[in-house]
Image (cartoon, rainbow, N blue to C red; front, side, top):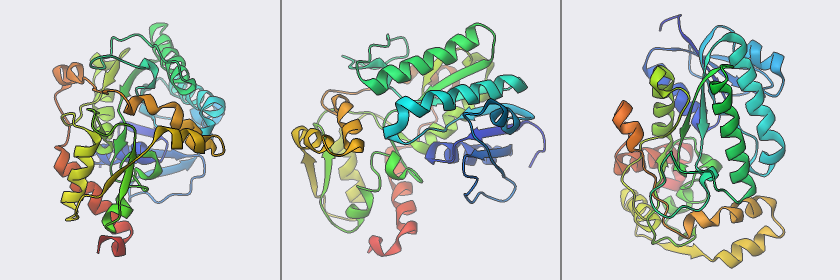
Length: 317
């Protein structure tokens, strides 16, 4: 592994780990930054404990970095209060050492969209989290425009895959019951087209963006497998697992009712519009510039199932 070109990854959730794996494939020197510092990383990967909200701590974590990846985020119920300070700290830290900043983002800022979701759409979000994402994206792009930093943004749809856990869509509430032959229920209208992202593709795309000066100062939708419906994708999960499909739905009213007493469900309910209308993500801009790094859907599903089976072998039988 080369000792040059240090890449620093803030966040050790599924996206940060996907970035780490892609960097290791490319022989890069990697430093992972965690608030707790309490995770296991592969041999050769440096792990340090740092508070991203503290500019000095963030700058120290970024020391000697060529590229910094902002993949850290607070709990879903804590976004409004805690997300902006995290991003501001990482931005400050990367700027202090002259590193390129690559930000992992989602699609909330666009709000409800009629037609394919492209990067040139206005930020029309009406939800709290959507407005926050718009604010944070504007902060990054403005910092690039004013010369404070060299930055780019990669955006994924609802994702799934190894390590995704509770963050993912086909996640801990879906795959273990599926492997056990139980019924799995999804939110929204599961027969409308919806683009899903594979988390490993998200990591690969973020690394690609960090390698190209042409990516700077812009937001990019990462490549995804062809859009299908949630029912079709979940059916493919059952088929790859060798199980008879047992698919249900959770009514919106039930979700909203639970949200009155459960803060996490309340945050999920705010975003239900994404699953009650077509949600088709266009990644042609990225593909024209850098190629298509999307993993075929069936392969992504097989890898996801294999990861879950390794975590709890008994559920695979």
